[in-house]
Length: 177
Image (cartoon, helix red, strand yellow):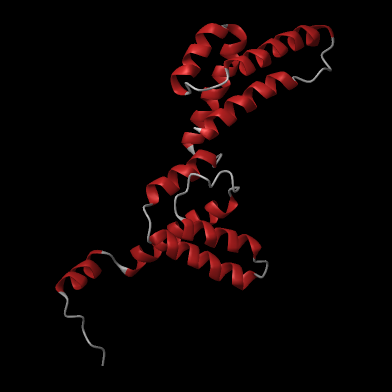
């Protein structure tokens, strides 16, 4: 026969969440761990949990199926012991299906378009969010994109590489913030 737990707080906690509820929570945490493992080392830099980072690096080294599953369970265990808010923010920042990622991309695209149409006002907006950015480098890219746009009018086969470089610069700026 099983002994009952005599701690009233433990019994009270168990009665509040069912076993199914706990399994769902563990599944959500495990999926967070899977998404973390898909991120690059640079994207994981803001993560301030060394044990979790070590577990993710070990997961990447493992090639066997069952060993990967066990390591993923271990990552889930590590996640249960940390504050999940920063982890979720990091995942949402790089998960292309998340709403925050979509909003960020739209903002960067509008800045890029604004730089090409009204450079001064857009530079002021960017300076509010990123006061230490390199204005000269961004202005150079905008000038190159303007020259490239004129060339594309005569030859549409020219790729918009400077246009893309502006977006990549803004994206890098946002990633480093």
